[in-house]
Image (cartoon, rainbow, N blue to C red; front, side, top):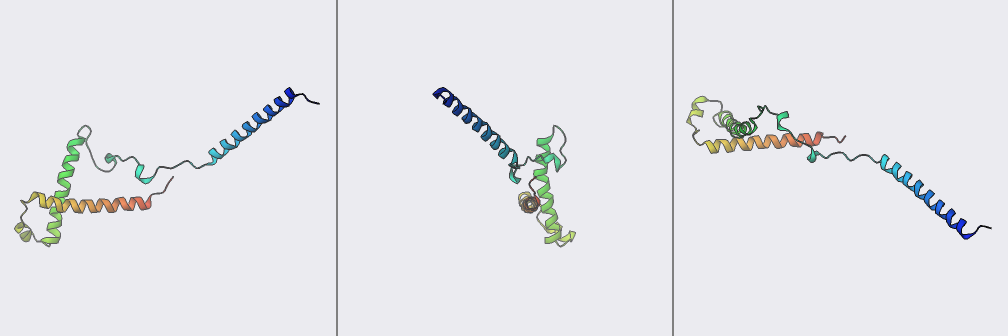
Length: 127
């Protein structure tokens, strides 16, 4: 017959053995889980991938793009859709209202960018 020391030692060994088995099982479960992929909104965005920006002139280039692109877009919209591609009608428009022309272009550029972002989102596949 076993004495109490041997019984306690045997129980301790069984307990430790079960802990080792459980740890290995949990490790296998963690290894099988698919790594969590980055969501569409958490991607890193670098504007240099999409537009030309000279090195060390980023702030000036972004400011010029912010001012010039919407204004040019607004002027082209006025020329094509309001003046109906007639230079005589285009000259009759008040182009001195810089802010109004810029706002028209800004809305057009914003709508195009939102549609582009939506299309990127719809085509996004998690890796």
